[in-house]
Image 1 (spheres, rainbow, N blue to C red):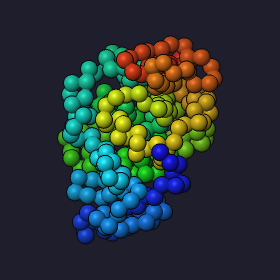
Image 2 (cartoon, one colour):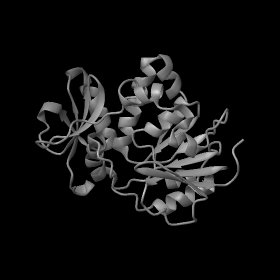
Image 3 (cartoon, one colour):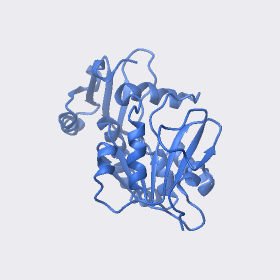
Image 4 (cartoon, rainbow, N blue to C red):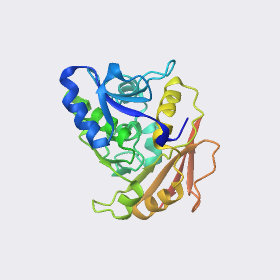
Length: 262
C-alpha cells in the first residue's frame, strides 16, 4: 500500500439528507466531500443508512469497514465470548470481582475496549488517527441510540481523539490502573476481516514506529500494569522486559506488572 500522503480520501453521503452531516465531517477532517456515487477512486468515508463506513473504491477491493457494537461479531462475543476467561480480560487483570479502570491507548475499532467494558470496566479509549476515530465515534453513538444492554456497556466507554503519548505524558484525569496497548503490526491472521481492515488502515495509520515511546508513557501512567498485545512470535517492544506473558494461537500479551490488582 502507498503512504497516506499519496492516498486520496473523500467523505461521501448516500442520501441527500445526510449531506450536511457529511460536509461538517469533511470540514473537520480537512477532506473533500461529494455524493458517494461520484467518488470513483481512493478511499471513501461514507455516511449511509447503517452509519459511517470506510471502503476502497478500487475494482476488486474488499468491502466496507464500520464499527458495530450492536450486531455481528461483537454481539456474539458479548454473549458467548468466554467472559473473564478471554485473553484480553486476563491480560488486563480481571478476576473475580476485580474490574480495573483502563486506558486503551491504541483504540482502533474499539473491539478490545468493548469486551472490557462489557465485563464491567470503565475504559478510556484513545485513537490518534482522525478517520479511525470518526468511525469509532459513530459506532459508539449508534450503540447509545440502540438502548438496552449495549447502551449500558458503551456508557462505560469514553473516546478521546489525540496522540496517546502526549495525552498520557500530560494526563489530567484519574490515573488508570491498567493501560492496554495494541500497536499496529503486520497481521498474520488469515481471516478476510483482518485482511480487509489492514488493507484499509495501514495507509492511514502506518506502523507504530514510536511503540517504545508509547510503552514508556504507558508505564509511567498506569498505577498497576500495562498489557501489550503482540504477534505471538514477535519480539517484545524495546524497553524493559515484560514480567509475564499470555500466549494464544496467533497473538500474545506482554504484561508489565507494577503492583497487584486487588
